[in-house]
Each structure stands twice: as C-alpha cells, then as structure tokens.
Length: 79
Image (cartoon, rainbow, N blue to C red; front, side):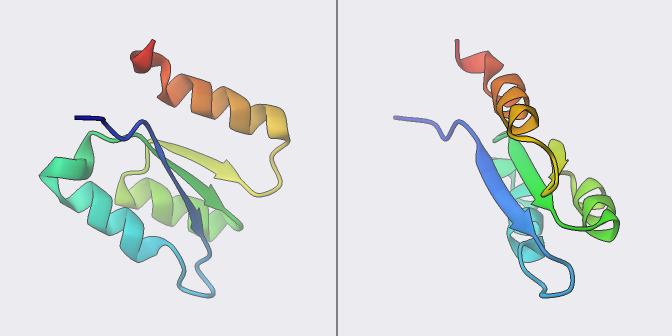
C-alpha cells in the first residue's frame, strides 16, 4: 500500500478556505501522521494553522526556496 508523503493546503481565513481540511486531517488518527504543509496568506491564517496542528506553515510571500526546503524537511523520512 502506498502512503501519502505530504499534504499541502492553502489557508485563506477571509474566504474560509482550508481550515476544515486542516482540522479534518489532524483530527483523525488515520491521517494525523501525514505531514501537513499549510500556505497562509495572513498572520491570522498562520496562527490558525498553528492552532490546528499544521506541521509546517509558510506564507504566500515566501520565496520558492522556502517551499522547496519545507517539502524536503517534511519528506526526509521517505529516503
């Protein structure tokens, strides 16, 4: 059986996008161990992601290198 390596979710607090997915994944035992990277567009979104249990939080304004570093960190266990 193949395992999910990482899940990336965009979080937009103003549009209520992403929060339900984060809470669903981190609230269920079967999904809880899957690394979750959240991309937030505001400080409030980043704080909410932290409260919901996101493993890594990036801002939409982060440079591409930060995204690559984050994915590498979260998938390190696969190599």
